Amino acid sequence: MTARFIGSEEHKRLFCDSFLETHRPFDPIDIAWPRLGAQSLSRLKALPVWNEAVRTEAETALKVQTLGASEPDPLLARAIALQGYEEGRHAALLRLLTSHYGIAVADFTTPHPPKDPVRAFLSTGYGECLDSFFAFGLFAIGLRSEYFPPALTDIFDPILQEEARHILFIVNWAAYLAARTPVFVRPFWELRRAGTIAAQILGHARDAMRVGGEESDSQEGFTMNAHEAFGDLSARAFLELCLAENDRRLAPYDARLLRPALVPAAVRFVLRVLPRRPERPRPAPQGDPA
Image: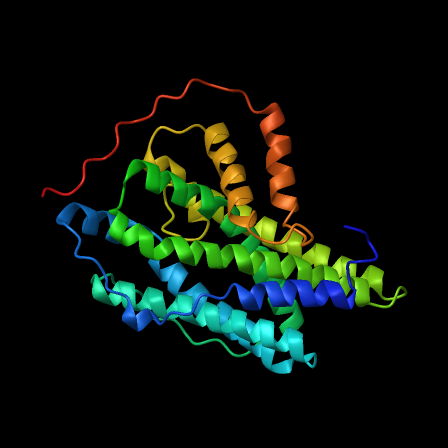
């Protein structure tokens, strides 16, 4: 891909059309939630993610929908509005799941629409790039270990693929805007983007350390730590799996589209210095009694 392509009308049509054409229509209200045995239900309720997940999805939907409504370019507005719809659908799905399985979720204050929709979308998008990278690996571990029954994980596999589409869109949208920014203003745009990325990295690192603390009940940062709940998997094996799953999730899309690069590059650097150790996988958890 040439630098001249980034920021061109062809680039915009490619990342917008790719996003629009790969949309998967469904209504969360039509999902047939599987009956879970006592063990699977206990595991589902024990996941320390529900408060944060429900709140974050609702906030993300509002941020993306606000940008879509304010975007003057018709094609960009259509694609961003679709992502806002999908984020809202994720929030609705989580509300239905927690209600169906009797999972208590704390009330939260409905946020106001962001005053700076572009900055809010940047922040949300780069946060999704971080979360999705680790969530892809975590989900693969859950499948391999059969921690939850396939009838439940089959519902969420397409949702993770939607997240792959979202992060692909955000990095191409950000690169497109940067390339279209006048040269004399571009350094300020890049500083703004770098500051947003840095804030997300620092925030996620802080949340991950807080989750690891014995006195914390925070649910944030769970995807960066939760692999330990599924077996005796080394940090190296987990990071290698995240890389492989990230590549697999993004592989179906046009090779000309930019991929999220910062987290994969950082992980590859870590893997060069991280020592290897023999894996001692735990036996797969036993499923619910028939």
